[in-house]
Image (cartoon, rainbow, N blue to C red; front, side, top):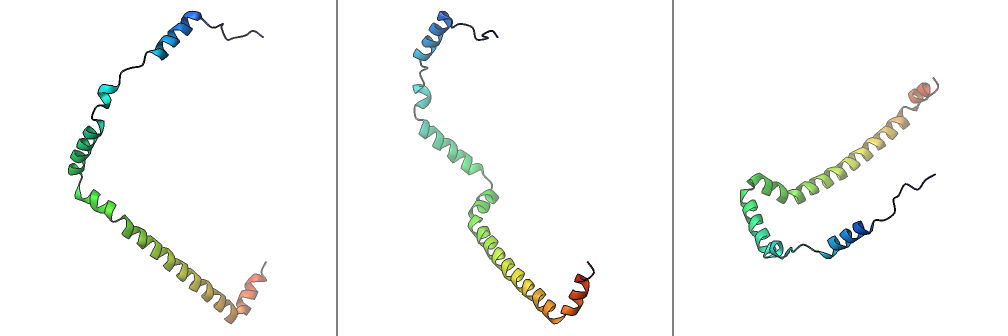
Length: 102
């Protein structure tokens, strides 16, 4: 089995070293970045629809509705389970007939 990795080339290593040593100057892009970003966000905020703002502010209300509905569903499910048990206790002969069919 032959080694498929070629030996390192000194010219290639020198090019990589040169590329690592030469860093691009990003100071022009960094200058007043926060100010430009905030100005852009202000213009974007003004163009949003009223429905987008209202829907985001209504999230706590909708979350509370979900919690209340979950609690209500748990209570109804509990009452339904109790009613099924009560019906079984009142008319156990019919249920026994159906279970004997197996």
